[in-house]
Image 1: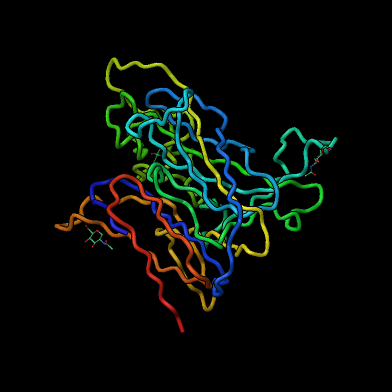
Image 2: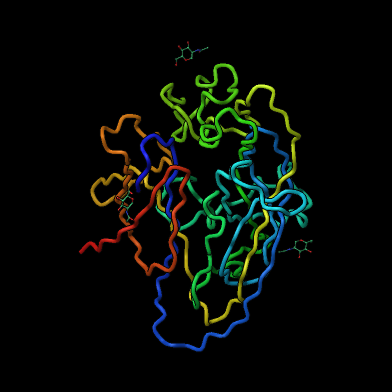
Length: 335
Ligand SMILES: *[C@@H]1O[C@H](CO)[C@@H](O)[C@H](O)[C@H]1NC(C)=O
Ligand SMILES: *[C@@H]1O[C@H](CO)[C@@H](O)[C@H](O)[C@H]1NC(C)=O
Ligand SMILES: *[C@@H]1O[C@H](CO)[C@@H](O)[C@H](O)[C@H]1NC(C)=O
């Protein structure tokens, strides 16, 4: 991947869908595509504000289905699309989990998600890093997410959901209000010195590896916590407003004509290590671009990611923040 060198930080995951079966026969593929448009719960955002939160239990088509596309837009209360120069959509991730049927459980915990089990995608990142299924950011507006027939993302298979549990979905979002900011770009890339960090923030905050945040950390998700405030131009005032995500899902009923495609999110910051035959992944999900890149105006971030499970590439796209020129994916077969 290439980044303009003085662009800041971030983010560089590649969303792939692979299928282990290739569609070889010319089957009659005639299935009725259904579609629904949903609006998420609202969230309030003021100039320079960060909203970083999970919107739990979003509406999602019911039943055993094959999802064909998932498109997201950021809208105001009248349903108008919000331009990115007013509100930057840093990321939206759609995350899959199962939860005990709480309405059924009379001994329900005070935290209704205490038993929730999150199901990450099939990609190679370690732990809970980049766990999403669909998910991109401001760059996804207008990009088709439709996967070709006869492939689809299988969800809601009752056999995959234990009795008494339900399959659920959530949005993990980060949205940054950039109206009236001193520097829109450094706000939208979460540069630490632009935000009202709490006292001793670096002493009490841990990074993605659970280590104290390094004083060299110049910006990124750890300086963009919910409700942080980016510096505004002197005297700028504008009302807070309610925004929401509008998302359109298309799907088909699941039957033997669909071929399942799975998500593999790869991270170009993955510091892959091998110990013997064991592959250890160490995804950072963001990094700081070196300030001085010599005469080369481009900075290239690369990872070589071994995959133990192969498949056919059905769809691919890259999550890219402002400043990125392009992203490339190469396959290499290892014998
Ligand atoms: C969850 O419990 C409610 C109330 O008992 C019931 O109506 C509903 O069908 C249950 N859902 C599932 C998926 O078991
Ligand atoms: C916070 O960390 C810095 C160095 O990282 C150190 O100089 C300072 O004493 C620490 N402050 C507190 C209150 O621990
Ligand atoms: C990506 O962008 C760089 C810089 O403009 C260019 O040199 C390179 O050829 C591009 N790569 C692809 C695959 O388009």
